[in-house]
Structure formats: structure tokens, C-alpha cells
Image (cartoon, rainbow, N blue to C red):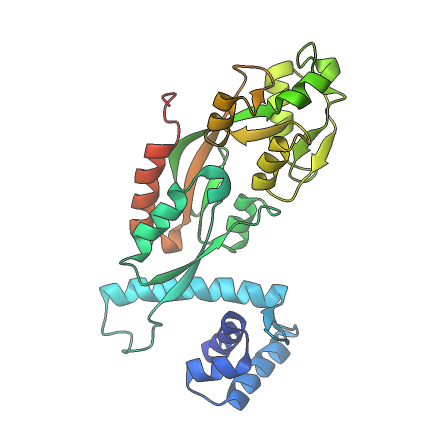
Length: 303
């Protein structure tokens, strides 16, 4: 059986950043917290906490936190159905749920949905924006309990609903286009014109090139750390980039950006996926996500 007293000690230290704060939260001595953590680490044969200021999780410690978050969600669900089974005060007043989404790229409707949800729900939200790890992989690994994902993949053990589609355009500044595409964005010109990508595995530039120009066309790329930085780099004239239509709209209208080839945008499916352990607890967030996404994203071919 899992020693949940020890697990709670580890999770509290990681969440709060210190053994002292964890001891105050758990209403035990700091020595008791240290002993519980040490015993669990010895039992598992791995370090769970990186001691420091603040303390942080090892890979194994992070997995333990993800597991415990699901246990907390299940206990809350059970407590709502059988309140006498769980003693008063045994559940935290607010627990943290981790979700993945990128309002900088998808739109502020995500933050509006979170705002609607937390007004009445007993949760704190940890919004994961780092895209160096693809969102579906974060869901599979248990790093997040829910996410807005891009693409058609629907994960096992998750409830999924379509939110519509995100229109992606290939854009550049007029100056960049005149230098690199004086005769238009032909395959020959694209093979020499630097684009913008988020790392070496970013699928969107290749997807647009294939849709617009066919197979076999390769383009060199500058690599940037985030989707938002790709938009900024395109505006700075560093390269051509794939950006959402809603971000580019005002700049296309004013002429500070131009489409490489008009009418060659790509529609990317957008989904909301929730691990089944959290479906009931996140009903309010799901409702807000669906309602606000339908107001903001392209649905069924209608903008």
C-alpha cells in the first residue's frame, strides 16, 4: 500500500518550496517531514526532492505529485457523493490543477474561461505554457489533467471535444518579401528564404509549404523558443512565419505584414481534452472553454 502520509510530505515540500513551510501546512514538525521524505526515498531508491531554496522535484518526485493530484481529485469527487466518508478538514481548501494551453497564440478566451471557472470552483490553476514538450505528451505523462490541443489526435482515457479550428497563415514583412520573393514565393525562392520555427520538430512551416507548394520543398529556418516569439520575429523581418490569422489580421490590414501566397492558409483542429479522473471536477471549466472558444475560433468553415 502507498504511504500517503509520506507522499503528502513530499508533495507539500515540492509545492511550497521548503520543508519548514510543508511542516506548517501539515501541522507537524520539520523533523517529521524530513523523516517521512527520507524514508520514502529510501524505500523507492530514488531522490524525490532537489534540496535548495526553493526545493524542487526530481523527475520521480514530479511523477509522485502528478499521481497525488489525481488522488485529490478522486477524493473530492467521492466527498461530494459521500461526505461522511472523508473527515472534515482532510481535503485542502483549494487544490492546484495543472492545465496546458497557450493564450499568447490561441487567444485570451482561454484566460477568460479560467477566470469564469475559478470564481466559484475551489481550485488554483497552474497554466502550463512551455511548448518544448508537445501538449499531448504532457497529457500522456500525467503532467497536466486537461489541455487545449492542436491537431486531430484524441487520447485514450481522456474526454475530448472539438472547439473548432485555428486558421494559420504564412506571413512576412513587405521588406522581407521583396528581398526574398521578388517574383513570388516559388519553390526555388522558398528553398533559400529563411523561415521561423519553434525548434527542429515544429510541424507547421513544413505543413504550410506542403499545402501551398507541394512535396519536396525544403526551407531553412531560424529556431525560436515560443509561438509568440515567432510572431514577433516575423514582425521584425527576421523571416517568414506561420501565425494565427487573428494575430495577423490587423497587421495584414495595415500592411505591416503580407501573406506569402494569398488563400493558402491551413486550418488546424483545436480540441479540449480532459483526463477522465478530472471530468466531473472540471465541468465548469469545460463549459466555459467550449462557450468562449465557439465565440473566438473558426467553426465548421464559418469565421
